[in-house]
Length: 97
Image 1 (cartoon, rainbow, N blue to C red):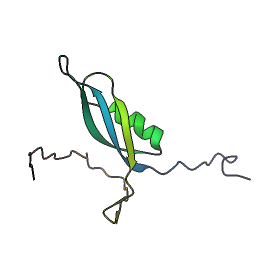
Image 2 (tube, one colour):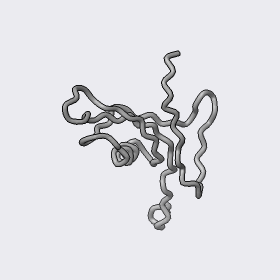
Image 3 (cartoon, helix red, strand yellow):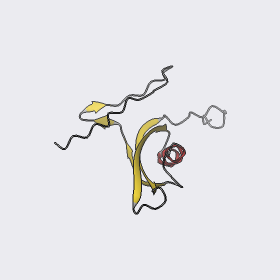
Image 4 (cartoon, helix red, strand yellow):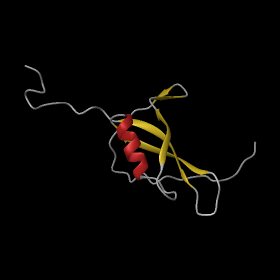
């Protein structure tokens, strides 16, 4: 008997994704605004949906690219549940080097 017939289907494990979103600029500007959003989702369609919900730009966003982050610079990315809010510190210092 399969696990699905027992009603004990396992949820697909969550993965970390970086999603590159594009969208309209503020009125009167030409081009596109872009933003990289990180989300935890079971699959790419789920990552696309969650990232769009986090868009902070004007208008409706679209997805330009999705990257599953499982290894970065030779280090495995492992997800653990946390009680931490996840407030990120962003360094917007421009460094032309």
